[in-house]
Length: 618
Image 1: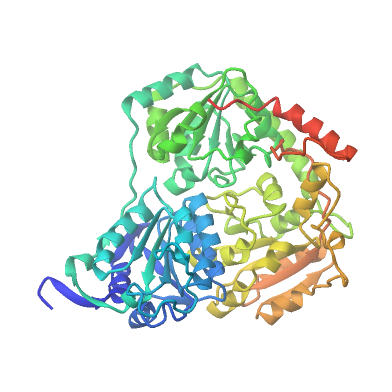
Image 2: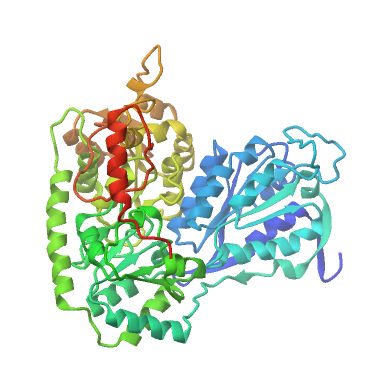
């Protein structure tokens, strides 16, 4: 070893590098990697497993029960940390690696940082085909880890030790970049993991990664301010970029100073305190009547930190004004220019502050704020009715949400959910007051994220009261990290809504003219109808669990569960057909153009009528 190099295996170098990358959160310097999730196998146990063991007292390694689950936990940690910190995940080759791919899709769509370190084949190919190796008969370079390429923001296969040096530099650039941020995959050939190399000592120097805040171009800023001053009915649509920028206070000041109402996407919900008079709540397919009413009339949409997903825009049929400007304030040029938007490429916080300065004392017409208050009051009345307690044998999702809000809806609560019908009801009806109080994975709408995601949130926000809402379908897909939460002492409360099937898709199926088929358990092929005791199952994984029979019992159980010393699961049966009729908007789900069934024909006619409101791509 020379003065400028240190001899380490590739795995040792990688782990040492991770321990030297730092960030500053609320004035405290912390490791930017909060640890590594690991499920070991022959493709990583001898290499990276040994390297992680050497630092186990200073750099934590966490064992999960499912590779996809541990990756969801890592992703949720990054989201709950507003992308300031993140985690790594390592697996063996073959099925262990491929189990990460769905989670990689979640991270990619939501632009969340996570470092995937799957094992790979032998670079020297001497033992080929090694156990779990994928063989491609016409391409010797193909491996299972190639599946990560389309769902990684950066992918590299480490086939020689020296390749690790530039790969790590590029990985950190992507993981911390506000534009390119997303999952990074470094596929580690298992023989190379164990090879030693004289790495430069400079690679392991401590580095602090700060938040980059790009400022807007002066001409774009001037054009944006001019167009906004000309608008008669502007509306702000706040996305997840507001939260990742730490721009919530700037957003509130901007809205109040200039009298512009604010609607929020799924990712942007909690970007503004929803008790604010200018906060209209959710927009789009799962939006409030207040937000959607103002969106329909808006002549300018200030889209801040949002990628304008179809649920936000009502499949681009929500905005009805003949002359509409979309002003895209986004750190990513790709998003800032969507659908012919007038771009303002900048960090959300800096962009809002400078745009406000450029507007000076300008405010929207007072009638706009007055209309926002009127529409908001009407919506709150409708929402209150939907959330009210009921004596129904099987309550609606909304009534369950009402019980959770009354029992556990405090400012310290983080509500976690992902797929099914619950995200739509929560988007409308949950009212967070602090940034991060609403944690939904709805970019990929990934069933199975909920419980593992809740675990990740408890790790990022140990002071928070983490409440996970999950349907029986998602629970059955991926519940194993309940056991991990108990093992790690990471307490959360899980409210499991059992509607005996995929109730959300059943409702969509019927709305498209179809009959209930293969979604609810009653309508699936079966010889014996399953009677699943979810509470007993959760107890078998170590959780405290009970089944309640009513909304009143649910509220009591939620209050009592605060005193429990570990993760608690509360199960309640719900109505698979009931949904909140107030609010919402059309969503483009193609209905068959021809059918022998009259219901489908009518649904197609209604579909064509709504398509006429869709705005053409410009």
